[in-house]
Structure formats: C-alpha cells, structure tokens
Image 1: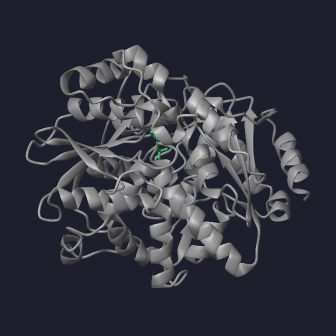
Image 2 (image 1 turned 45 degrees about the horizontal axis):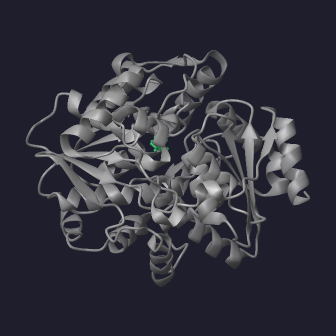
Length: 464
Ligand SMILES: *Cc1c(COP(=O)(O)O)cnc(C)c1O
C-alpha cells in the first residue's frame, strides 16, 4: 500500500514513511492510493472476536510490510492494555434503536487515546529499528495533547512539544498536559486559539530547514495512522449490532473531521453504513457547508465543548480529495482560497457527493446543556458536552427507524466537570487512577503566537 498526497505534488510514500513524516511536503495530507476492501464474509467473521483481533484485521491492509504480523499484534495488545474496560470501546444502549459508543476508557479519558496509544507503540518500534530520533510537535484543542503526552512520555526516541490555546482548555485537560514530569515532554501555552496553534504547526512543517534540523514529526490527525486506528471501532460496534447483515448509522461530534472521516473510510472498505451524521457545536462551518456548499470561516467562538472549537478542519481536505475525484489541483485551489480569503464554495458535483454520504446538524450552547440534563434525568446517563451534542443531533435529524444509530461518546464527563455540573447538577468524579491530578505540580511554558518564537524555543530545548 502506497500513500499519496491530497495535493498531488509529493512523491508516494510507504506507510512507515507517511506515519513518521505526518504532513506531505506539498502541504497536503497523506491518503492510501486506493481504499482496501473487506468482503461481507470477512466482516461477518469479526463477530465474537476481541477488539485487538478485529483491529489487526482492519488495519493490516494499510500497514503493508512495516511490521510483521507478530510485531503488529504485539503493538496492538500493548496499545490497548491500559484501557479500563475489557471491551476497550463498549456500546451502551440509550433507547430502542440508539446506542452510545464509549470511546473514553483510555488513559486520558478521551477517544484520542485509541489512536495515540497505538501510534506511540508504532513510532517507538519503527524509530528503534531505524536508529533515529524525532521531535513530535502537536497542536491541541485539549484532548490530542494529553493523549500524545501519555503515549510518548518517557520513550527514548522522541521529544514531544504540545501547543495548546492558553486559557481555552479545561483544568483537567491542562493538568493532564502539564503534570507529567518526564524530561522529553514540553507543554506550550500559546497566546491564541486552536486554529492559531494548528496554523503554527502547519507553518513549521512548511519551513523545511526547521523541519529537517529538528526531524519534525506530527501526530495530529493530519497523521494518517491516527485516522486508520479509528476505523476499527466503526467495525467492532457495527458488527456487534448485526452488520454486515444490516445497515448501521453513526453520529459523530466533529471538530477536525478525523473521527468521522474514519467512519467514511470504514464505509469505503465495505462496512454497510447507512448515514454518517456530522454533529457540530456553535462553530458550525461543516454544518453550513453541508447545507449550502459554502465553506466560510466566521471566527471561532469558545464553547463548553472546547475540543470542537475548530474552523479549519484539517481532515476535511481528505474528503475534498475524494469529492473532487482525487484531483490534487482542485484541492490546492480550494485550500489556497481558504487560507487567503477564508472561504471556498464547493462545486455542485462535490456538494451532491457530500450529501450522498453525510447528514449534519449543529447544537447551541443552551441545547448542549439541555441535552446533558435530559439524558441524566431520563436514563441516568451523564454525558460530556461533546457527546451530548452528538446525541442531540442524532435525535433531531430524520432517521430511518429500521437502522440502528450509534452515537460516538468522545470523552468522559469528568474531563469537563464544570459544564456537566452546571447542566445537570452532578459533579462527575475522576476515575480512581487519576484522582490525584489536582495535587500534582504543573510545568508549562507560555509562548507568543509567533512562528519564530516557537521554533526558537524548540531548537533551544533539543539543542538543534
Ligand atoms: C477531538 C475531539 C472531538 C473532535 O474530533 P475530530 O476528530 O477532531 O473531529 C470531539 N470530542 C472530543 C472529546 C475530542 O477530544
């Protein structure tokens, strides 16, 4: 399996190269040259298998010969050993035809752990074999950063720098990033919002001198391996409800479009997904794009679901590439327009294709709080704000009642205790294993929203 750039101007890479480099040098994102498919029999055979066994079979076509089968199985088992639920990603029933996929049983209580724990193991193996060391720089709206730190802390072959928007992440999120005391971990509080952090990261990748000097690697969802790892739970959850013998729909709380894009990949691979529903908070650029084809930035408004406070949805570029029949030039035009004018309009053909696969809905702040309250009062389920948005949207769109809906629960409510308590009166407690989070010392560096300043800081810390 080879990987090509969505902008069509970088050479094709192997899985290992695409994983270790992150962003393509032409500014594009790597995608597999073709979508591998699984037969209905293969998918039916997942029934009764463990999460790890299904993970192996779903991801195997993507990794080529980067790891032997035995190595890859070991990596997968190590990655998920720290999950606090034997099913890893269990399903909970909300009502007759609506299920919640709990993706928050990993070490940092958000779905980002599912991919990041795997990436940590894969990086470590690949780098040791190559005798190389890399500098991982990440941008986070809160959850990616802590998941990356947890996955890479103390590893020999990596230094990790995480940029987060100063003052715009929850206290739990910040402490998960600032309390690990391993020397290879650096938490950077940037004077800006998440889109600023992400823009700094992209600019670092496009500064080839810096990129080569520090051996820059990325683990944001621009990294294909992240998306790949998330494809797995679409299969495990759908099969447990009767796929491939029946269709299943999914609703996904969306920010950077990585998680829902993994659902799209599962569908391309042969999983019979009926509808993929994009749920957004008040930062609803993706919902507006679905409604009108008009993709216009309006400025990010901070919300009680901070992990979705995003307007430049990086992974949407991967979808655009398919919507435009994999024409890199078309993607370049759209992305240039977005960068320069803050807007682009989809062609009619692309808008039509988008509607063939996706539905969407958005949720205001008041509606989010109301849904947290309703779910608690009606069925005793305490939802995090992101998951509540998706439940609300899944309940409000027109649904085919014969098709089960699976809504993704992306974080544990204890990651966002203030918003949850304000909405339903319950203070969600941190699980035992991280109960002392607020007693630990914090360590972080404040930095201006300025490329030169951040690059200088990274160089100084690693001596490059
Ligand atoms: C990252 C995140 C999201 C958004 O996922 P994307 O892949 O960026 O669309 C939603 N909810 C939570 C809790 C998250 O951490």
